[in-house]
Image (cartoon, chains in turn yellow, cyan, orange, green):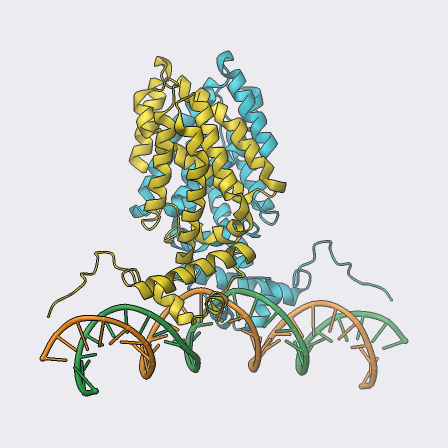
Length: 232
Length: 232
DNA sequence: GAGCGTAGTTGAACACGTTCAAGAAGGGCC
DNA sequence: GGCCCTTCTTGAACGTGTTCAACTACGCTC
């Protein structure tokens, strides 16, 4: 017997064949649309299946749970974010400007989904959840985001302590998670407060980062970084 | 017609009469016990009702949702925490020692419920949730906790910038929320990493707080505090 | 005691996410 | 075509949190 097509190490249903891929996309697209229209909780699996013209069980053949359907959302948002800040990060400049651009475009990219994010957040926040930003399943999205912040740091003309510089992309990603946490809970119209947070916290971060290379702060920076590495 | 008993402004079922209060307690106590034994998700409303010897509907007569049953847990943990750190905070001393004591006893108080907290966390993290630490329903618990941190600050012999000192209790409460966030996701045995986080971050916080009263940092401290007040 | 209104209680019913045994469709091999 | 194995699809069924119309128990007024 000859296996015509070898299954990949991480095989998921319907990723290999044309038919499966088609149904998969159909379900994802329908889900993403409904999530955006009605929020996470109000979009039932039955509704997704019905709108996509398949059975409930079929949706579960492709996705282990309702949560997994949301990874697609992450990718969508990140695509928009990458596109939006590509221009701002193209040419080197002061750290503060690059950071502000990266964070603000991030908030912009998420903006259309504020309602959805609110209803979905509880699922993402759960410790073992596959859609938690810290989970293994989210690794691709997370690493892509860290990579973007690395580009923020790499193109910065500001002088930064080398040890801090190495860890900074990941720390900034963490800061973005914090901002997102605030954003999700932000009930101000148009999430004005979150934008204000970014606008005014970036100069502060810049100032602290700038201070990092002075001798006086070396011990604190060292200690903080080593603690971070230890507990990461 | 004469109303013999005026209903209080925030009247909840079964709070006034003896019979109601009895059933209410019975349900809460049963729920708290089962939560601790089996976790949040595995403890069904049917199981709580059955174990308490009442009907499901009766539980819902006293508590609007399963979530609301958890406020009792908060109180339990906080009672333990208050008791545990009372002694350490009784006599004035260095800020760093008082803070460490407050945070470590907090972690100890939560420790028995780590499993439960993990399964429950997703509910507490939801923006509009009544059991969110930022919600109106949690105000009593929250204020009680802030009060404890105020005592930490008030009894501190360390010199602290006055403006910072005023906001510090709330900021420390926020820090505790951050530590709790880490703790919930901490899978190390016995949550060793969280203890390490407290042990090593308190000196750092202490150092930063100590720096706050030097002239050089006044602008940064001022800006950060005003931003915090604005976005709170 | 009779009547009445509130507080307390019940269990069936609903919609949900998820599971699963069963079957249908498709393609390679004789 | 006939066979077989994998891929794909179905819809009923399970257990969940929550709701609700109906019922009972109690305390008050007459």
